Image (cartoon, rainbow, N blue to C red; front, side):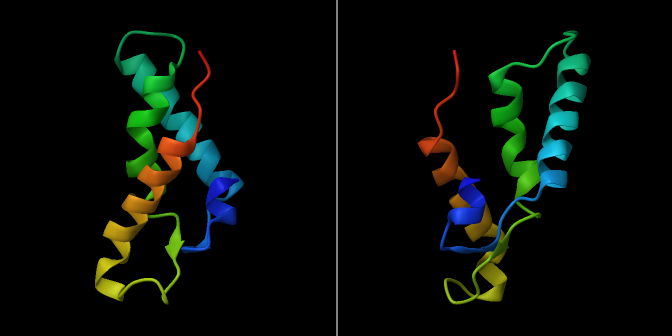
Amino acid sequence: ALTRENDALELGISPRGTLALFRSAQALALIEGRDYCIADDIKCLVLPVFAHRVIVNSRQTSTKRQATQAEQILREILLKTNVPV
């Protein structure tokens, strides 16, 4: 939801993007020998799964810097998000 409300993003994460993160976290947990996901699985996969799925507002940055800007915006959102314990 925070990606959809961010003024720096023209387009945030869709429900399919969230499902991709969920599936990726499940795969990572399985690779690491667990049958459950932990918060660290999600945190380490947010950038690789979401960065190409958001569209940075073109008024905020040049086309060449949009990928870097997308990652920075996602990092800021991660810092604002509380992780359940």
